[in-house]
Length: 406
Image (cartoon, rainbow, N blue to C red; front, side, top):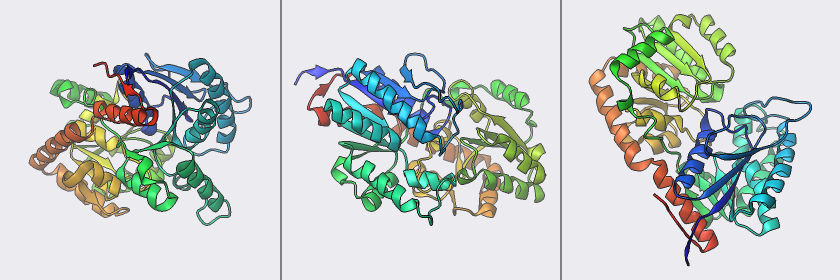
């Protein structure tokens, strides 16, 4: 078959673009496909930052709710009705070869579009829908609604898509074991690192010192860096408790916590734990403009995420910057970090504090571990390689040979 450019419609049920998590995956996939010569159109909620070079169609704002809450929300059903209507209109304009639905709502809406136009549907699975709702305390796993939500998730994952991309090997097993998704349609596509943006060679010692001064971090303190959403299931509270225990034991270590939402809540918690002088909250950080520089001043990076169903893409940015990583011992973290991760049992705050302290006190070990992780990121977690994987999936669904323009 002759080579062709794919025309792709991505359905993103979120306020794309925002500087965290699954948004990074959507952005990097779209950019990677565009670099290879393919056309990508994204349909998303009305809020979010526009990204130069990407074609984005947004829904109208809800008349009664002009802002979007991160995570699960009772308003999401209305958002998704608007999203489906917008996607239906854009589908007729774009006439894509592939519908690529991100997350479960994107797969459900994408299935409706794909059926109407007889096109294949790719489901980009970024974690369990019911698992996320439980993590956000939006759904009680012992409540009467949970079985119905679980059944809906199972139908979406196992019956609707022609192919499923998973953000981790853990997610692949979850789909097979819990949701009975046929293994033949699952294609692992782990999150990756932007190796150009998160390159430690971009930042000189003088630049890093200037950033420390800008953030008010004392020059003599080792810095523990975190980038991501601020939430209990992300381990933010555990991180602050570890900071308190280190301070009480005489450790003069500074925590740089970058992200949102709930900044005021965690700042108050830091004050109550008497570690406000040893913690800097930046709030929302521009992922590509500011995050690499801020992260580069870290001596140790942390990921105390406790969710067992979601990816943990922040770890890959730490790796690209050659930083040693202390992480809770989950399968996703082991998939990314391999033998070079510094693992702590999930929920072990004392262990978290001690692992951080040990690395802060051992510069030689930090360098060895950080360089090994950077090499691992380069070899195994490149977005350019991920784009080729996506194209092979598209090709298998359409029996068309994709053209890749380098």
